[in-house]
Each structure stands twice: as structure tokens, then as C-alpha cells.
Length: 179
Image (cartoon, rainbow, N blue to C red; front, side, top):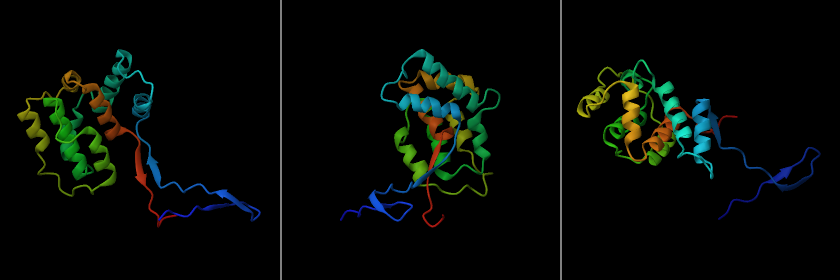
């Protein structure tokens, strides 16, 4: 059974036409550069295969993932990183090291947005990131990681999708009980 149309009420009491549906999402703003790159990448006509665009993705990744301290290593002790977010970091490291993910990059978006789980109280026992660096023989140099990442088929695309999930705008469902 379909939802009945909501009739739009005008200021003087007259009604007519269909009312706009209320927005069910709000957005937590992310990194401006990532958002611009993502908008270009997802537009129907894009230049995402040009070197100029890919160079922008690489420069953005280097800026956000750090040129001095490795961003991935720093997440090991970040108590704000939730369960799925931590697993996403691990899967991204697997992709950088092997060119394969356990879960498609496109499925991660749904998991991270629709199934948030709170952060951990105690992160002192976390060690999976360090273990992956050792097992996959990854260098902690961000530049070396970006070079390896971009060498995989579809690597730059995966990198931009990852940057969008890590640092782009975050759509959040509005709580219908809050006004």
C-alpha cells in the first residue's frame, strides 16, 4: 500500500500541490578537496583517467595520509575508530599490499554509514595493523605505499574511493525524534 500524498499548506490556509518530503539525512562535512575530486569522479562525463586528475588524487592522498608519519600506523591506537572503520583500514592495507580486498570497496560504504558501532574503550591490545605491515612487507613511507597502491589495476580508483570513505562528506540519517 502506497504512502498517501502530503498536501502542501500555504501561509493563508490554502492548500494545493504535493508537499516536499522532509529530508531524512544530514551531512557531516568532510575534506573539501576530496569532495571536489569525488564529485568530478562520479559525474557522468569525467576525466578520471587523465594523468592530471590522477595526479590530484595522489597529491590529496599524500596530504591526508601524511608525508611524515604514516596515517595507517596512527590508527592502531585511535579509540575513535569503530569496529567496521578499523576493519576497513585493515582491508585497505590488504589492497595496498596485494591488490585485493576481502570486501568490495563499494560495499564498505554501506557498512560504514549504516552500521556504525561505537569506538573502543581499550585499544592497547590492538595490533592487526602492525601485523599486516609485517606480513605484507609494507614500508611505512607514505610515498612508497601510494606508489604500490597506484600500481594495482584500478588502484587510483580504489584510492579515491578510500579517500572519500575516510575523509569525504558523511551522510547521516536524521533522528526522527529530534526536531
